[in-house]
Image (cartoon, rainbow, N blue to C red; front, top):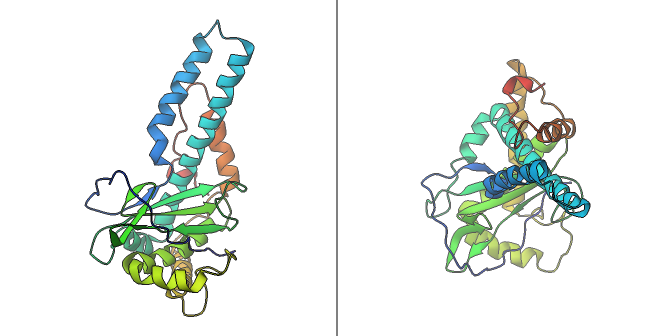
Length: 261
């Protein structure tokens, strides 16, 4: 199932985040990365040294550890996924790694791989856009000003789905003001998520299909020059989770490039 656009709600920002000079394709889990790592260290230490913990307290600590391990595992999986997309489709990656809005401001793209059943909306992939209340050309997300976000289910076709979402972003970011008006007019009366962003005359949807074809061409070139097929995301996540539970480490380790098969 292809992606959808989120409605353009105006939100009040209490704090405007400092915008760096260059936009980047980033890992959407990095927002809580250091806090999660520190918490996991503390909880593991508590289990090792907490001789006075009751059985119920130990179970609560273990439950918190499991949640942190899952979060950090998804971070590592997403990091590997983004890295491999850059290897397979370097031209597209570089282009989107430097995308700007209509006023020439770089915009960050935050990507997350999501387990099935955890998605915000029932589709395989989705891009989320919002405008700031005082700047119709500026994208904003919970990651901060000048940013958009992408959620993709953990599927074997996830690289292809990311190319599709980047196509939507390619059109929307530099045309946010104009596109938001079209979007709210065109999809105001529909609740079909799979339809949003893909009606006739939707330039965002058209660009998403252009990016699909571009990705397939870059992927063809990648394989032609000896590129290896990546490990399926499901088994890779299982390996990362197993590594994360290793008592010798505080958080998952990145998989080296030669682990990709």
